[in-house]
Length: 355
Image 1 (cartoon, rainbow, N blue to C red):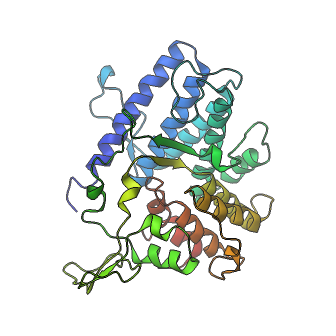
Image 2 (cartoon, rainbow, N blue to C red):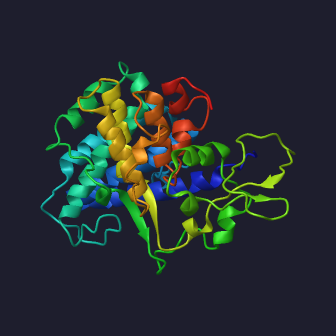
């Protein structure tokens, strides 16, 4: 770790935030409610990732250099979350679902299909549920349960994702300007290895996506020895008697989808909320919907006997829901890390177990 660790993500995020800020100003100036709403949604997405990564970050004074603010103050994470949730609620009320966009829409093609605006609205409310679930421990300081129930109990007013087809994603075609973010696939795997925890979890699941996600490990003679990851947090200088599995380089090649918010994630959120009695509904049904959706979103076929595997079957525990949610968040920016990346993550706080 150096003082520059994470600088690239920080700089890129604020570059995006500035573009979103200008988009919102333009939308307000032209009284375009849909673009204003989309700007609020994208702003909440960008800043939720920023604050979940770094904690307190510049927010209210960010992107305002033209106003003479060159050193914006750092806002408290709690206040950022409150404002993001208020912004998302306002965005939901702004969307005009009978009017298309005037410019290209790489997410939902809402410039050609009016249903794309409804999909944006579903993204908005699904994002609210992600953020509200992440701060459930703060219920009382913030009216978390009330806001969750308001969304879930009023699907006409607050629609959410209903299928994989509504997943928020960016389709990278490989045709300019939609080029892969990593120019050389070999750079995607340089200095990396698949984690032992993730590999062993998928092996235990008999997950049909193993070959899609990973390369096989090799022994010192260079022969394949199956899928075997590297332990997380191993000591510096540790010598392995094998070359661990790595990410499949094809994951970085076009065509590919950059997942922003998958439908499967929402199903696991609803499963957790039903498990805790915060919303009505069947936790097992939501759970199984999530497992099926995350397999199918990658183009794989859900095995007919998948839930006969005791390591995948719903067993009435929150640990099982959170573990399969963790699997579903693979390749969704930094969401896996936000859920399970350290001793303060939701996975450890929620289940009370350590890896």
